[in-house]
Length: 114
Length: 112
Image (cartoon, rainbow over all chains, first blue to last red; front, top):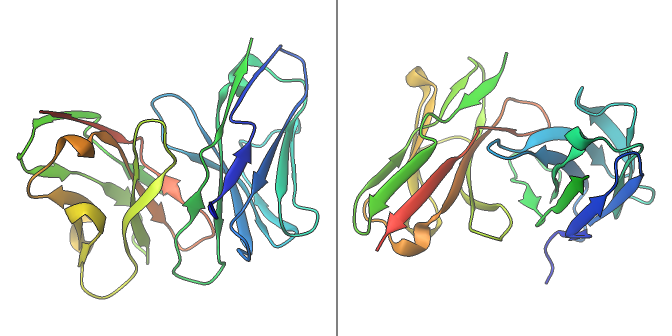
């Protein structure tokens, strides 16, 4: 399968713990995006990378959130000191980076903070 | 503020019925428009997209959408739905920046 892959698929953590998610985009896709989706809502943009550079961060991305894409390939999203409000599906998407192309989504990581 | 509205939250249809799901956005500039579908337990998949040209676009699985610029709308249609179309449908708009803004989604249930 050459699509976007995310790991883990599910994560249950206790409030206050740190969690890290990984995203492997489609090979040779320059752009990588993170979105968050809560129940009954559409995905909301968190941040995106052009190669290894993080070019935009949403106001939704508080100081407890950090994302990296160290070599312009896979990306990680870390949440420190998790809160119950962080419970959501975290989606990764990638695109070739050219104008007028769509984003390809992974299956997401479902985070539950208890 | 730039936003996307999907007014139908849950639609229930019988097989072979015709489908139209509404999508409106608030912005007067150039936009790129998308419809994504999410089948149960699966990832978001692109149904169709509009960037420019013919405002009537055809996508996969018999879906089509019409961009009406004057109405800021991009409604999704299918003349005859099947049970396998049961899914959640998301309209998404690129407002000339690097991200997608999604609507809240429409859950479609097809009754056999």
